[in-house]
Amino acid sequence: MDTITIVRKSILDLDVECIVNAANEYLQAGSRVCGAIFAAAGRTELQAACDAIGHCTTGEAVITPGFRLKAGFVIHTPGPVWQGGRAREKELLYSCYQSALALAMLHGIHTIAFPLISAGIFGMPVETAWQVALESCRDFLEKHPDADLHVTFAVLDPVIEKKGKECLSALAGSHAER
Image (cartoon, rainbow, N blue to C red; front, top):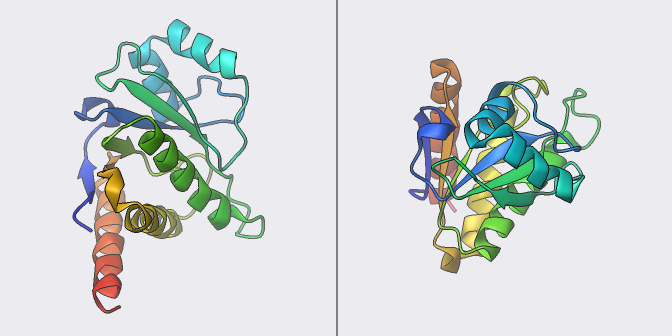
């Protein structure tokens, strides 16, 4: 599990090859992390690249250049909106991470940073979002050890960071018991 880390830092400040945008299905500039990514990349350029793609279904992922970002690439993945767990939200969120990591591997990317997808304005409970995110990344990395991927989660809230590190520690502990 040493290939997954959680840091309290802006995703824009990380030295990684690729950052992940918690996108909407229409790949339009949004608010919060999405808005910050578009602003830092160059809103016009990134929006034009997204418009050329047009759409991305929840749980899938697409890739664009990073333009003015430190990261050379942005992977966009629409997370599910929380509906109380009745609408396959966990399954769709799991697929977001799997799709983004598969796209990173396809493009020869070895360092990737994620926000905590669906836990913000999409309303998924933080602990649920962490469990799904970490399990999905762990499963992908175990299935593809040749990918040589290092995953970083960037969060700004110390409470969310603490909960993530607790979930990561619990996941590592349950993994060691296998």
